[in-house]
Length: 124
Image 1: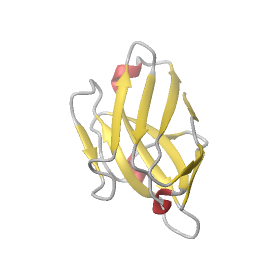
Image 2: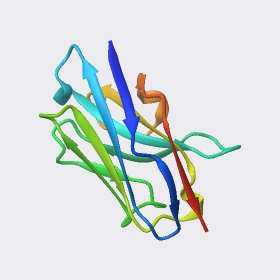
Image 3: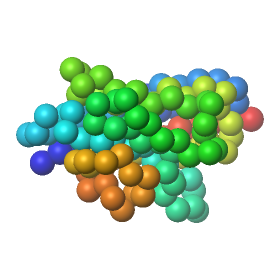
């Protein structure tokens, strides 16, 4: 099985920054998994934020976060990160990391493994 644990959420003022982490434990090597970050705002559907390939050399971002968010991973530490800068109130959501073997798709349904989520609240 694959277990994912997010951390780093919190309350921040607009324009501020946060760094989320997602620690992964799995029987397979961490580098076998593509990773994604998704978010769900109150009353809204789960939304793609970013994804990263197994070796970390390729990434994909939602238009709404391009230039502000950066995804990275440390395969030696079994951890994926989401650096969020220039945060806006509309970034307020529960942020989830997810894992899948293979390609770093953008659709939530392509990811079988999920963390419990971490709350990010951006005040205006």
